[in-house]
Image (cartoon, rainbow, N blue to C red):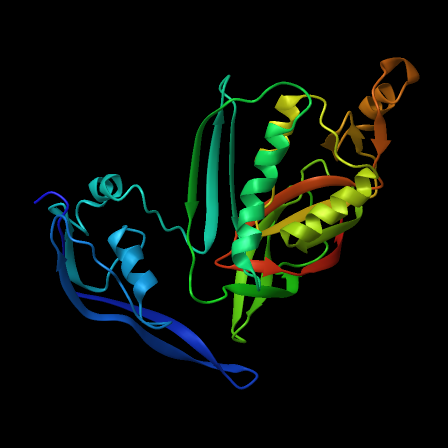
Length: 328
């Protein structure tokens, strides 16, 4: 029947690890949902109430196909939850939960679009999430280049009842040193959650085949730290030349639930006309820096030979820096 929601004995179990002492942890079973059953008939207004930790968010995530239930069954508009997930997403398109984050997509006239997502985990998350959306929109609306017509704005916000945040406490290369040009090596990143749990993520760095021998620096950091480092290197405030450059910059904004890394060497890149170009060859930099080019060039003290990122399950703060030898 159109608009009907029916749930029978729905259950969801999580398996996690709980820290016990300094070096030990033990498996923990968390029953987020136990035998939930109800039915919503067409035209009914249904309220879902409960204390913190009761499982309201988990239930909604199951019904919107973002989590698979451990047991039980559910139907939305006659579609079965575990078999017709694509059709269910179309039915519940007005509500989309994607973790503790906000996602927005702005479509502008002329085919331009800005897509951005971020995770906030602070004392005032609502205000911070509002700034995530309002800041870029204000830059677009107030740009000095051309009038912007917004054809469509899609905004998705998910709020969870716990503060999902972690601190980056350690990073190390899990491979023999020195590194070799052309090698791909794993870097382990240790996070500590607000509950004291230790989580290790892995990213792979690529040493370019053309890398010369010498000392390199690996920075593993959160979004804010990486932005600050780049801003110091640029030695000037970002000033876009046109609307297209502004849109590109907004689409490159970093997110709070990412771990960023970059491998640098002491050599010259530059900021050229407001564009951050950290790995320019010396010959190109020499040409761009000549007085007859009419382009503002700010040399960089270090050149990035590799950059990457991985998604983390929560908002991340902190950074670590490693000195890595490369030998040909």
